[in-house]
Image (cartoon, rainbow, N blue to C red; front, side, top):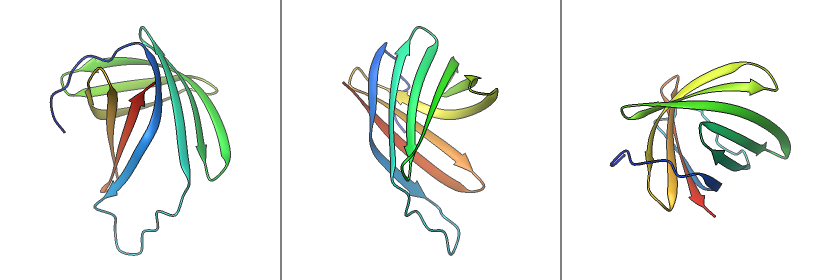
Length: 108
């Protein structure tokens, strides 16, 4: 994915999402949008999948090449992603059941 980098406070918008290694029969026909507001160790998120909007508040920690998130609202949940960051973008790679989702967020 590249050099890890520093996550800079600010607003980020999903500009690209790519699915890699999908199993046979996998369909990626979803419409996805997302906006993050990052401040300190807190992320305010608004995501929409096929028109269904969800809002989250999360805290994050960094460890090597990974970012771990803990949702504090609307309900507790946690996840971990590989990441890279530049002054212009944040890239997250999620792996779930062999499917890899590479998301690029462009800083506004």
